[in-house]
Image (cartoon, rainbow, N blue to C red; front, side):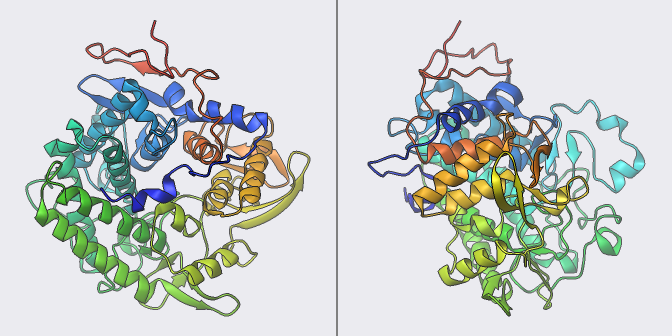
Length: 483
C-alpha cells in the first residue's frame, strides 16, 4: 500500500526528538485521552458513539478528528496506538460502522443523536427547513464531513489492511453514497441531486435546500457556476454558511479523500470495486481541475494565492478560518499544493489582510498572534483559535518554531490545562467552549509528532466514559488496566 498520503500525518522519524516542557508533556497525556474519558460511549453491535464534549451529539467531522491520534502510524514503538490496544481498535472500528449507518440515514446531515427518540418531537419548521428527523441533530451540508470519514477509514486501513469492518457492505455503501452526492453537487446550480435505491431517506429525492435565513435564494445559496468541476458545500467546517458555494480547502480535502477511496476500491482484499475507483478518480480529477482554474486569485500584495471560497463566476472570498480543513492545513491534509502559491497564501493568512487575524498581549503568553473564525466573533471580537496555532506548528519545518507554538498553546489555556475553541488575544482567561475535544486531540497529535515522551503508559492509563458492549468487555493493554 502506498504510504505517501500518510506522511504528513505520521510522527517524525528523526533520530533526535525535541525537548518540551514538563507541562506540555503532561498536557499531551491529558488531551490525548480526553475524548475517550469524557465523550466516548462504546455501544453494543460493534458501534461507538463519540460526542464533541460539551455538545452531546456526534459530528461526523469532529468525531473522526478526535480519534485521529489513535490511528496515526509510528506513534508508539513503531505502531499506531490502535495496533497496540484491542480496546482502541474496537472503539475506532465501532465509530467507522456507526458513522456508515448515519450516512445511510441521511448523507447531507452533519451531526446525529445517539438515538431517534427526539425525532417525533421536531416541529414543522425543524423538519422542513432544518431537515431534522430521526437521528439527525443538524442538517448543515458540509463537504468536509465525509472527507474526515474517508480519512478515518484509510488510516485505519493502514493499521489493519484486512479488518472486517472495512469489508462491511454498509461501509462501502456510505462511501458510494457520498461520491454520488458530491458528483451531483458539482451541478448544484442546476438542482441536481443524487438518486438510486440507497437514497431513500426522508430528505432525499429533491434538491438540497436549507433555512433561507442562513442560505440565500430561498435556501439554495448564492449563485454558482455549475461547470467548474468543484463540488458545492452549503456550510463551512465552522458550521457557518458559505458566502460562495465552492469552499476551496474542503474541495482540496476532497481530492485527498478521493485518492484514499480510489486505493481502497482497487484493493482486491478490501472493496475490489473498479467501478467505484473509476468514479472516484474522475471526480478527483474534475475537482482538482476546478481548483486550478477557479481557486487561485491574484492579490496585489502577495501575488497568486488560494481563495477560501469562490463561486466560479469571478467572485472570491479571501480569508482563512481556523476550523480544519483550511488553507493553512494543506500540507497536513496531504494535498498536492503549489509551493509558491501556498507560501504566498500563508503570508496573507498571517497578516492584517486576513480578516480573522489578530494580535494581542497578555500576562499568560506575552505577545501573541494567530487567527480565528467568524463563528465566535459575536462573543469575542479579537479571538484566536488554538487550532490555528496548532496547525501553524504542524505545517512548520522549523523545530524551534514548533516548540514555541506548543509552549504558547500551553500558556494560552490560562491555567486550565485544556484547549478551548477560542480565546481573547488580550485576555486568554476569556474563552469559548471549555470542553471541546477536537482541539485537545490536535494538540496531542502535535506533541506526539515532536517527542517520544507522550504517550507513555507509565505516566497515564486511560478510561472510557461508557462501555456498554457486555459481549466484548474491555481488555487489559499497554494503556489500560482491566479490573
